[in-house]
Image (cartoon, rainbow, N blue to C red):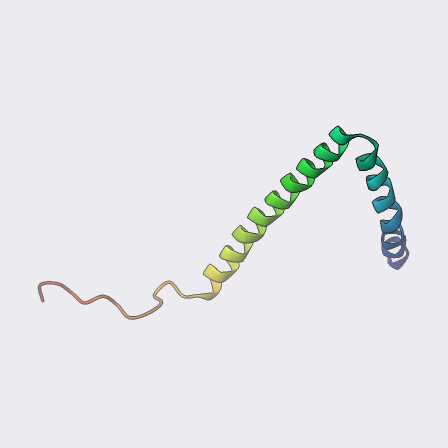
Length: 73
């Protein structure tokens, strides 16, 4: 397992090099890479926001604060 992680982390500089070669090869490729990255970041951000909201709603009780005053009594 550690060997797989080491190989993945070792390939990151090569991955960055390959992506930069593609992005610098053609202006359309750079735009497509940018929009792809924005799409992924937006999706991860929305998922993170929803996951954080679910965690917070599980921690904070539903009756947070004092109860409202009763009318007519």
